[in-house]
Amino acid sequence: VEAELDEVSGVVLGLIDSRLVPSNPGLRTQQEQEDAEAQVFYQKMRADYHRYKAEAGSAEEHAALAEASYRAASKVAQTGLAPTHPVRLGLALNYAVFLYEVPQHSTEACERAKQAIDDAIAELDCAASLDAASYRDSTLIMQRLRDNLVLWGREGGAGARAEGATLHLARGPLT
Image (cartoon, rainbow, N blue to C red; front, side, top):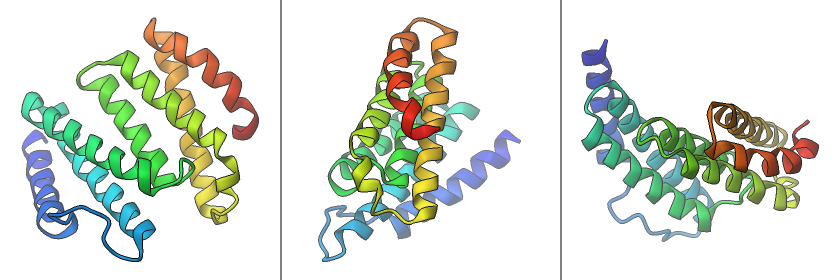
């Protein structure tokens, strides 16, 4: 199974690197929103596959590559996507899971998840511009972020501090 995962991940990463993520990732066209969404999506996908490889065995090298890709995607998401955008929230969710599970930085994982929820809640008026499917996706991802904070808080210290504030803020819009 590990060899098959490694092979499939290698193929996907090769396609992302050669065809989907531009070598100069600056936002250069009139369609900056679509470009930002695509860039974040593919950088997140790249990071996710490196995370899978890190979890399956070759941890150090792929953990560093996953971290770099999550950071690159986060940088574009911060300036190019609304905090309520489902791709930005999905990135925050996956990055937080990576931080919690691979390098085991539970405090940073909780802070990232909490910040994503807080930013989205503060910008709920932006969600009015989302279509019904995107709005539903965003609220489901926010719920998963919140659920992770609860779970991580139960597992020990670091998440517990982040959990309380987020649960109070998130209860209204997420129910």
